[in-house]
Amino acid sequence: MFSLLLHVEQTAKKFYAEILGFTEVEKPAELKKRGGCWFQNGKIQIHIGIEEPFLPAKKAHPAFEVGNLESLKDRFARYQVKWAEDGKLPGAARIYATDPFGNWLEFLEWKIK
Image: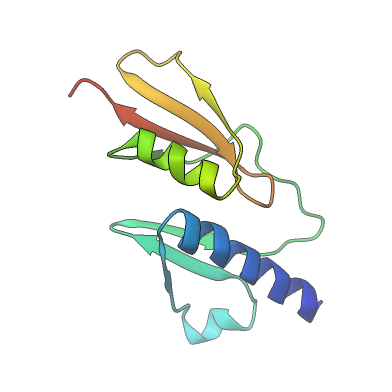
């Protein structure tokens, strides 16, 4: 189980910190023993943990507003992160991607304010 926790944490750090630019934040002492890791960017926090059996979120998902969606697409291309464009939200450019665990993530840039 320890090696699985370590693998999940390393994978999460690469995706959320290195690729998406979040900063890892220290978990409270009482929660550290559960494993996993937390990330923050501005007011947004993401908590990554392990549960057995694991089922990735395929419909319920976070949506992240970004300031430059084209730049994020380029970054995803550099890191070989697959994404799909979606033009169904009026006034927004929007893409979907999955994290390394299969969780569905939405990234959008509002074109009208």
